[in-house]
Every structure is written in structure tokens, then in C-alpha cells.
Length: 107
Image 1: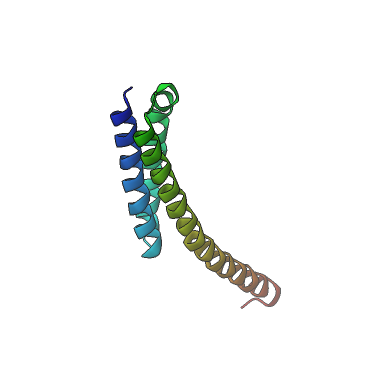
Image 2 (image 1 turned 120 degrees about the vertical axis):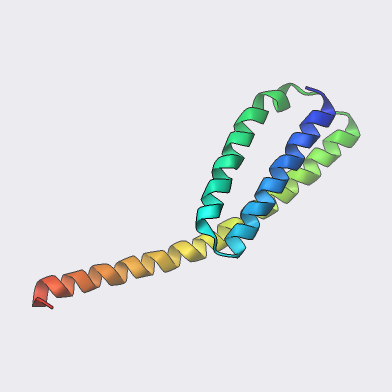
């Protein structure tokens, strides 16, 4: 695969992670899951081509820039999903406590 195609793949991946970041910021969890599947598929298809590509300095620098952006998007996505997961965990614990009370006292 040529350098331009490799860079194009990373640009496409960056666009997907940007959409994922927006979905996480807006709490659109179903959309985030769908985009994560799309992202995983995209990564799987580009792995072999990326490993065998010979990049010139310009393409290599662009690839590095895109990887840094993808990683920044990933960090932001994780920060939002960790908050959401914490909230979900608290809700589930509350429900379990409520069920125990119901079982113990027949409410």
C-alpha cells in the first residue's frame, strides 16, 4: 500500500474517533457503541496494509500527528465513559439495596 493510502486510512480512523468523542460528550451511548464497532472493523482492515507500507518523512509525520489526535480522542472518550459507568454502578447498587430491603421486610 502506498503512503497516501496509509495516511488516508488514518484520516478516516481519526474521523471515526472524533465522532465517537462527540457521541461520548453528548451521552449518546448507543451511537458510541455503533461507532466503536465501525472503528474496530476499520482498524482490522488497515493493520496489514499499514505494517507493510513504506512512508516518506512527510507521510510519517502526518501519521504521527493523526495517531496523537486519535489517542487524545480515546482519552476523552474514556473519561466520559468512566463517569457514566460510575453512575450506572451507583444506580445498580441502589437497586440491589432496594431488592434486599424488599426481601427482608416484604415492601
